[in-house]
Image 1 (tube, helix red, strand yellow):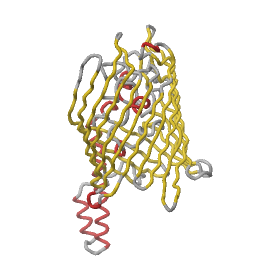
Image 2 (cartoon, helix red, strand yellow):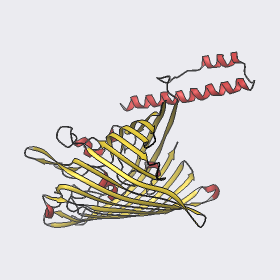
Image 3 (cartoon, one colour):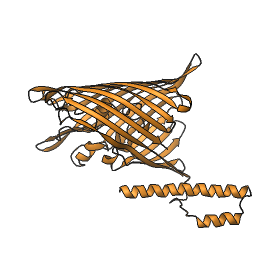
Image 4 (cartoon, helix red, strand yellow):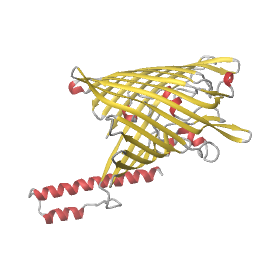
Length: 429
């Protein structure tokens, strides 16, 4: 499948190049630099790639590459173990196409051949869209696989992240459980397959909203690959909705852009627990208020998470068998200032916190689990800097400290502390 996708993208790139050559030849004929016969002969000798449908209006090629270096030490206090990892990875390798086929219909396909996309069959986004503009209904209707509206940081483009890696709160509340027990998994948020509507309200400038109905579990990571369609909540639909307002205010001739709102979600099969009679599906609901302010080079972002997990307190023995209400938050501050011909520099700081209420935290993200041990609390601090050498080129380096507490392993309480250094080079096109 990977080879076929690459071949398709190369063919579409060739089509784009051919279309540009044709336009150049027409321009040269108009300027009298070539005759029509000469242009026709050149075109005849060139390879021609045409779209599959003559209704296609345009095809846009897009993507980017992000390469990381990571060093991490995890001190698991109770056992005395200090596992250490370091190395390079191609985290995101994205190539995509966006085609306009007329009458407001578009197709958007984005692949990801990096380590992040491997668990999703190298797909990042696959959407068929219809733009609708009626008196009281303005927006875009999507069908396919994309992120649901839950999690401010999670829904930022991978290439637009202020911190190099997303936070422990984002992973806990918006992705399937990884690193935990095989008999109990929470699967809520992130990418899902379904129908999505995102619209605006003409009567209130700046107000926006969204509604989506998706398959029971998200199309993301280990949680998706582990479960199967017959017993894990994939047969149960999930529902998401959001409402927000964004605009620009002028204060003493200074423009301040602001955006605030709230995301909601309900998954009737969002928490699957294995029993002697098979899997039992339990519900998960979530609420996620958020806000951001941008003024000159300053960016301030904040969000809060609350979830209800039916029968979810299985990770920590003290809560066993009780429904859980985990909570968490992210707060990020960044300031970008100009360096002239050297581009721009952007210091970044972020604080994250999670209380799992017994659900169990098994690591700070999908890739850093702690021997399958559950913890009840997490806190995390990130400080780093981004250097934008050009608009499309970004270098980043950052240090992250995280601590998981309130864990249990036999009769001994466990704590785990992470120290992580990451560096990144990123180019988008």
